[in-house]
Amino acid sequence: MTTFWDIVHLLTGTPLILVAIMGLTWGILGGALPGISASITMALVLPFTYTMDPAMAIALLACVYIGAEYGGSIPAILIRTPGTNSSAATVIDGYELNRQGRAGEALGISLMSGVVGSLFGLAMLVLLTEPLSWLALAFTPPSYFGLGILGLSVIASMTGGSLVKGLAAAVIGLMISTVGTDPISGVSRFTFDVPDLLNGVEPVLVMVGLFALTELMSQSGSTSLTQLKESVRIRLPSLAMMNRLKRSQTIGCILGLFEGLTPGGGGSIAAFMSYNEARRWSKTPELFGKGSEEGVAAPETANNTVASTALIPLLSFGIPSSNSTAVLLGGLLMHGLLPGPRLFEQNPQVIDSLYVGSFVAIIAQIGVGMLLLPAAVWLVNRPRPYRAGFIFALILSGIYTLNTSTFDLGLALALGVVGYLMRRTGFPFLPMILGVVLGHMVESSYRRSLVLSGGDMMVFLQDPICVGLLLAATGFVVYSLTRELRDARRAKAEQADTHKAHGQEAHG
Image (cartoon, rainbow, N blue to C red; front, top):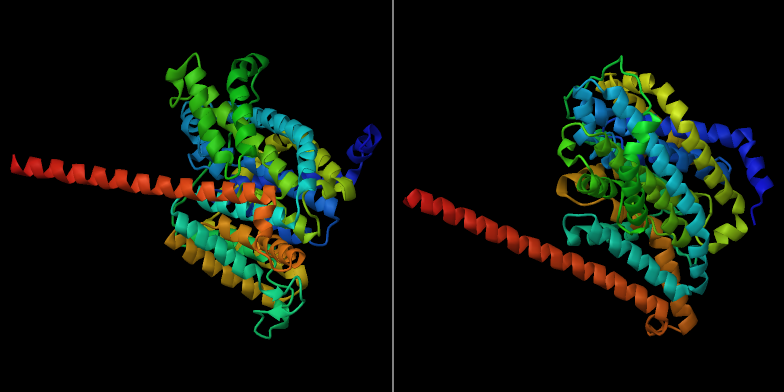
């Protein structure tokens, strides 16, 4: 049980404070770079946490996530280009305020709304995570198998696009997770007599390859140039302005909480939902889209709330709901930490460091955000080849520090090519990454269940939790498939109506 003095000790511990501020700083700078999302920013720093103390490593990743969610609003407001997916809704009114000469005010509203949302999300994280994690005590090996299948099916069906492609990507991830040593018998498999593959393909290599290297390859053919205003300064909102924004911020907090708890939800969904609801409940809805302060406050509150509440299902059950939480799960597993009640019992210092580090980062966000704005503007204004070269060198050096292995470098580059081909053909990344991350849990739980039952497959139907989870997984897949078929029929009907209208015009 964490005491008040434990928290005081963590707060006064200089290393944790430094780690929190370093993570926040890197997150803001990474989030401010268009195209470098929060998950990519976290994936870039993930290899460097390999040799860190687990508590500090997890706190660092969480603080990077917090910083990136705010950093994405900087280019969204200044150049109409969201730095992260979740800041896309901020573009609508943030850029309009910039055109009216109120960029500093828009940045200030974004910053303070982010702080409000982050504090609310952190409070929910502290209050809900540990009680929910105790539900996992009732889980048996069949239950964990069902939980893994549910996580994969939810992400595969909620990532948008084709359900078949989402499920195929998840299967590819599961196939990659089988490379290495068998978890039950210890026999090597699919290693092709390559010693470097005996330990399997590390999830961090998959994340860095698919997220960061793929993004660099995708941007290599772009010639667009973006320039930020060097003279802009953040202007924090007054108390009267904060009072005017409280309704929009409350909406952002509530929707951010629900989206963070929902598997497959995310900051971008919460941001757009909050924007629409804020407009519906606003006293001046006509200003939305023309430079409304509420139109900046609502989405920024929501996506920063999600940055904390999305950790609740991750820490309680080990199910990530977004790319960023998948990277954080990879960090936990990389340090031998398993989400659930055992994490709270056996590694309470990790949880305490995450909570306290996040709190420090949220409070420091005000000062650090104001100080870093000129640096973020300077960084974004650098020529694209220089930025890409710096990020590429950072990726390679981070990967090499894992095992000082050139084989890892080649494997990450190969995965980057795979990711580029997947992006070009419309295959989502997250199901594949979750397949790699959750593959060990799914396979080992499946094999242990069969060992305990003597090979009887009915063991999965005799466990009520497993049955419920498998039925839920089936429901998500069926719902997604039904939605796809309905959308396809609607599109076909609209196309037929269009052809009919054109035919009538030609006949007339």
